[in-house]
Length: 151
Image (cartoon, rainbow, N blue to C red; front, side, top):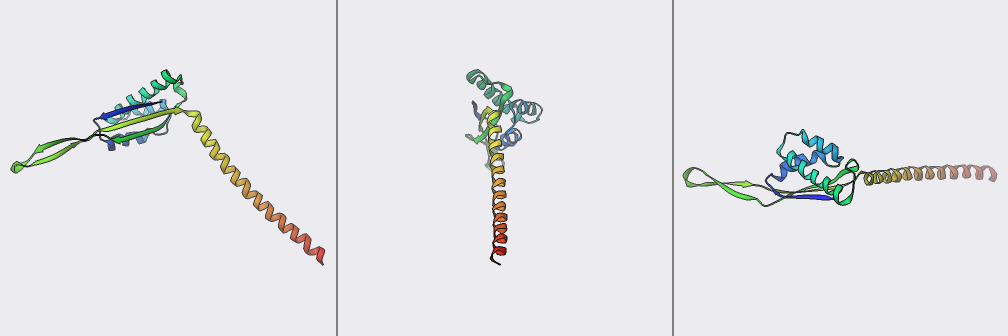
């Protein structure tokens, strides 16, 4: 469930700035954020995310409310090289950068499962620490019981 936009006339640095705002958010929330972000990249990313959402709804029968942005990748595309004439017959180079934008959209429930598994691992570690402490206390009690019996 993804959408790819290639050779968009926006530098990757500027596109990545806007992409950082919406990484990991729900699709509806991301679209609302982009709608009111005053950047050229916001309008472009809005269209790509809307396209990825439409792909998920039509091709994979997903509900828009459950979707979230799993990955946004902004890569550098080809650079258009232009020049600006300057004094003494010289030329200053102008680099018109382009970028490739890839948006992956996934189901929100998958993220919750990952978070719950991380929490479960954390609780297991805490339980193991408690078990070690209990074992140490048991050893201390056994050593106390052994010392009076020897006397």
